[in-house]
Image 1 (tube, one colour):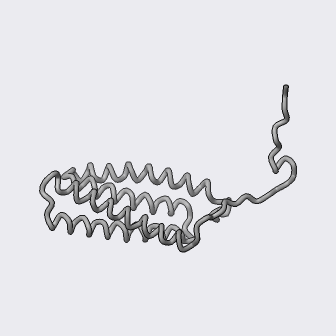
Image 2: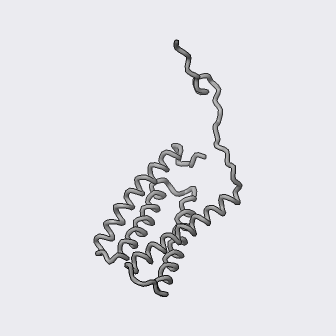
Image 3: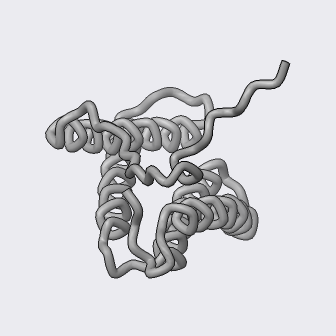
Length: 151
């Protein structure tokens, strides 16, 4: 026996604006943004220090290198995040900003493993290009025709 499928609101003429509910406050979002920034920085710093030490002993200079790398990464990540939130930044530049940040971060990590400059640069460009395509697609699908972010 056949049943009629439920009609969408567009077909029935009832246009309703759907918005996802935000269950967290603005303060919670701010705290989580800072927490994620610090956590990513510490993870990146630990990774860079571990690659640089190459299974050798943990020294004070190695720990200092890890914390300095973590601090620089966290500051640059926060800067890219804030710069990307500007309304005047078009999707191509926004995706290019993430391309440069990710490419440099990956290239630096690869260079810590005593790789050649050419291999470090190539690795950074390849990973950065993947991030560029992904971010451009995301921004392209989350903006209207005028370039304003939806939601």
